[in-house]
Length: 324
Image 1 (cartoon, one colour):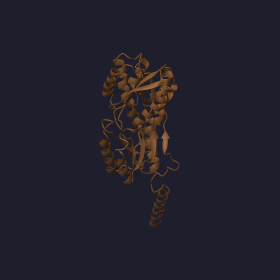
Image 2 (cartoon, helix red, strand yellow; image 1 turned 90 degrees about the vertical axis):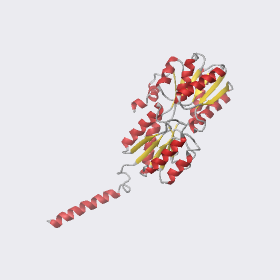
Image 3 (tube, one colour; image 1 turned 120 degrees about the horizontal axis):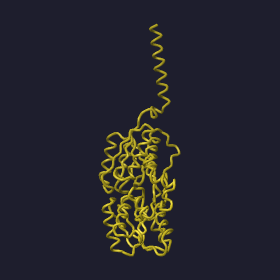
Image 4 (tube, helix red, strand yellow; image 1 turned 135 degrees about the vertical axis):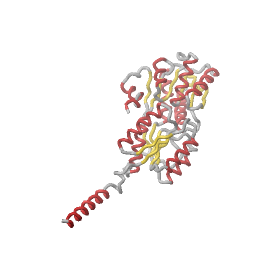
């Protein structure tokens, strides 16, 4: 009887080991670790990114950490966070670069340490990125310019409110917009400013620009904080009827402005998808399921104005965070 019991135990152990060998050295059974290093943790855009990332982490049983600096200009802190994530054992990093050039070395070092890199929202000058997930920023800039061209008659006198000049996505959006405006033959670029990615300084800088150039009748703002600040400036100066503002992203204040008149159109991205697909891609990379993975994934954008604000499609993109 004792020999039979020992034989049964050995058979059970052998069966368990054989099962383990089918799971690609345990890749599918163990919990992987991913760090999401964002540009900021403060705005509704990033809260929506985080909601998507957390949903994917729960679905794929990933251990997820979410970190980011206090301001969207602090690339040095981002670099330190990348290094710390590597030291803490992150197997993959989902990253949105504040500075296209100055974040590159930190990402290169992380990749050389064996960490898989997924870029979302804003790219980085590194050849070590496995995939980029986010908006086609040049095309989104084209959409912003076209929104104004389609809705404003006559000559457009344009003021541009952009954020950090080293941020790839903001510069790509600006270039797309300027190219379309130039091609139209109806637009003059009166002033371009780069302000902090924070509503208060963006408002102050926009007020100053509008006071210096009262001929401006179109404003383009290229992310959530600058859009909020630009809308506040338009309202503060009583220019809702004379200045056509195209902003970016979904924010309670800009959606209210769309209804009340200080905002005229929003180019709305899909941050929830960026977060979800970023973490899902990290999982695929870490579990050997990356065959056929695309190098660039466009998460799409949509133009929302007062005419389509309450359609189902617009409500879904404006309030994706709430549905996550």
